[in-house]
Amino acid sequence: MAKQRLSRRELERLLYDASEVLNSVLEDCFPTTPEGVAAEEERQRREGPIELPESLRDASKVLERIQSMKESTQCEHIIVEDDCGSAVCGKCDKDFGWYCQISTKHVCEYENDEWCIHCGAPEERQ
Image (cartoon, helix red, strand yellow):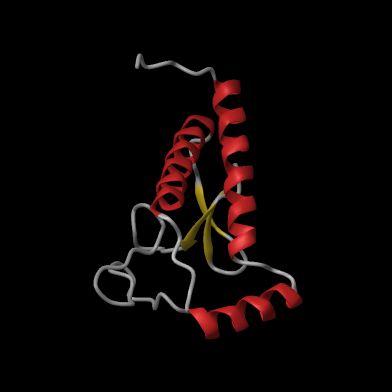
């Protein structure tokens, strides 16, 4: 099968269509209404948790990759600290996690424990 180069508009449409399908499937698996949540909790008590099929996990990975490709071409992020201490892009408002004054990326990073490797702040915050 030959590789096909997609235009930006085609890529955005593909991403939108794929995310709509994935969201529909996930909403069936993980309801959000109080009645649906209660019914799902009862089903899980009887049958155990739902294991997403490998194809859905793969589809989710593909969507994340397409989304990151799309985002990387749209915005050269400028990380700023918001009122809550989060690191967000000043241009597109994408949230990158906790803001770090010490890191050159201005984002807290964690390895093997729950404390930022730069500033020492905890990953879980009030």
